[in-house]
Image (cartoon, rainbow, N blue to C red; front, side):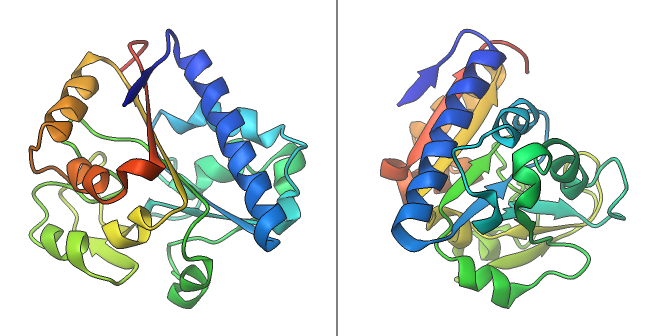
Length: 220
C-alpha cells in the first residue's frame, strides 16, 4: 500500500502526473475540477510540475487548501502564499484560488464536494491538514459532517491559530495523495495502518481504496 520512490524528485514527478490525469478526467466527466493543495515542504516540487501542465484546462479548475494558518496573505507562513507563488503560475495561473482565510466560503466549498483531487502531507505526530493531536476539539473535527473547523493556537509549526477542512471533507474526495518523506514518517504510517488511533489512521480507514501513499526516504 505504501508506494516507494528513490528520491523526492521522482515522487514529485509521479504525483504530479497522477494528479494531472485525475484533474483532466474530472474535466471530461463533469466539466470542472477541484484540487485541494496542502502546506509544508512536500507539495512544493509537485506544485512546480503541475504549474507547467498543459493537459489541464486550468480555467475550469478551483484550487483550495486542506488548511490555512490565520496569518496575513503575504506572511511566509501562509499556505495560500505558497500556492500562489509555486502553483498558480504559467498555465496554472488561470485556476481560481478559493482561500480558507480570512474569509472562508463554506457555501463555495460545499459546491465543490466531493473534491476531485486532495493532496496531503503528514506530520510526525500523525496529523493531516490541521487535524492535530492535542487539539481539545479534534474528535469533533474527525467526526462532524461539517466541512470546516478552527484549530487553536499552540499546536503545529508555527503554533498559530488555523482553519482546517474536516476529516469528512477530505475523506469524501475522489482521489487522495498522501506525500511523505523520511523513515520517521514511514514509521508513523505503518503504525496507523496497524491500527493506532491517529488522524492519518482515521483518514486511511475512511478512504483506503481512493488513497495513494507516496513515500521517499529522501528528506524528512
